[in-house]
Image 1: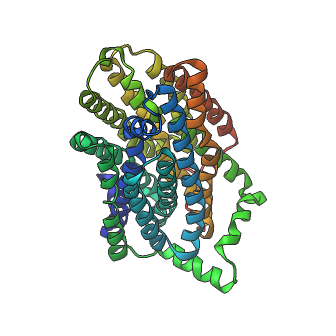
Image 2 (image 1 turned 180 degrees about the vertical axis):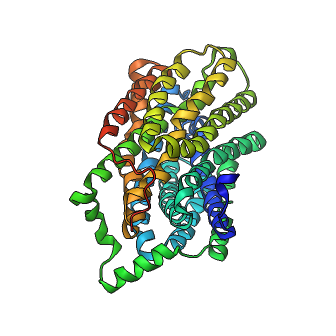
Length: 426
């Protein structure tokens, strides 16, 4: 890897620890999408007085839990982003990893659908906060000319986390969905690695000392994101993140339900369906991995904004294609990697682009706000999808309608600031 020449062992270590935290971040976020159907089937059946639980009910309650999860993610991302600027990147990483690990495990104890919703909300606080701290610490530790590649590798952790969740589902599905949530406790061990190996970036230390001397606190910085110098960056960054999150959670994360509806899988037993869903998730994320790793090199060559445009356009095309074209399990397996490349690959742009928009003292606050503020609105996406299922009659129609959101992403790009080739603002 000629591009990696000059990268120190410690810089690789920081990237590895942040990457590992994001792997489990993604695994914990994905577990619910994988077990959504069996978990809600059991939890809703308990209160159904013997009546059958319908797909419409699972879509409705599943959408509500998804929405609550995204609200928690947004709150955690914004709140812990400010904490990372004030208390430090590594301290925030440790706390957020512990939060999402513990509450993912506790979700195994859910007895009602709303119990699950509460645990997922608390899990999401940690997941959102860990993203903001991890993106900032990698951006500030790695060399300027290699930052985009490092951020792309960091985002590839999401594909690895999806593979890990699907793998655990294959191995443990016969023991029930609760055991999968218990596996989510594993990330707690990553917090120890952060504690032992990672120090605060020198950029943050210097900026923090200057802030202390001026008696200003990070918790007052949120308003600065909307000052004239940064206002446009904040609105554009938040809108792009909103589009990406809305599309992902409103459509792509319902892929397991799409698989279960394939005509050639009807009548299959639960174990076979679980296996097919796991392989489909792996196919989706095989394409995602190429998208995650490809965004950085493409952004270095063509610029950040053209690659965001490519990902939005590809997602707009591939969502309806994936949900309408295939009529068999084999056909959907061929399309899912293409969908994953665009629909998930766009997320590599955010740890590259968002830290480049803000000075060091505002970097985690600004990145965390942009990536998560839109998530509050995007939290309606799963709920909207559930409503569209009841209105339009199928997940296929609902997910394809959600694809229209990517037109907003294309529309906002002309107002965005290109940061390619520029150093991080001090």
